[in-house]
Length: 219
Image 1 (cartoon, rainbow, N blue to C red):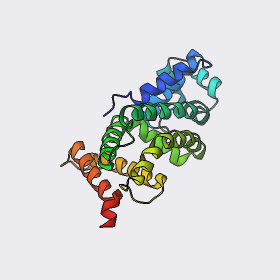
Image 2: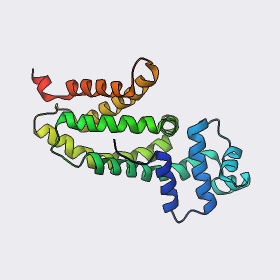
Image 3: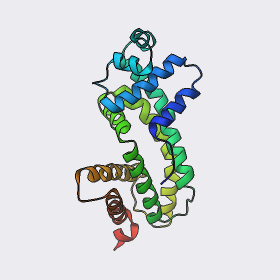
Image 4: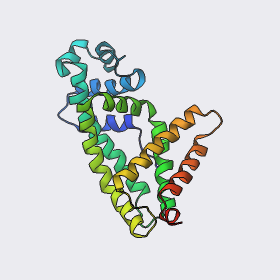
């Protein structure tokens, strides 16, 4: 597993790098994501955000007008940078070798991303929830996330396919299958009190390899 920062840490770093933001704006944005991940978007009030940020509630209204505007124009654009940083760090540490086998690729990506989701579950839950309920937010995040991901995933999947290790399906469908399996791995760990996260990860790798292997399809 890579030793990458949590989403909240990456978010805080991205805020600091945006020099156009005032100190109070940075505090409000950071407090917002933390509270959204802890309490949920709907249950977080502007007064909660102001208290956590150490500013007057009027400051929140002055800077962002509404909580929705804070999400769309404040948090979403910064999350694009955060997701890109998380992908870059994972790619630099785990996906350097384009000549890896299908088993090696699935082991790397499932182990690392399962642990990443588990480590960042509160923040990911609020982000996914808003993506499902807020089309504007989803469009902003997905556009950057998809572009960054394809730059690192496609070369490896293409290489696996050229080496007759991967079934003939579009890359986006294969990665969507892997991504949904990773999410299911973490959920399975939380609902099955008889398993460990490691056991769930190993089972997912085995099932994915059987489903995606060109050799299994030819047999």
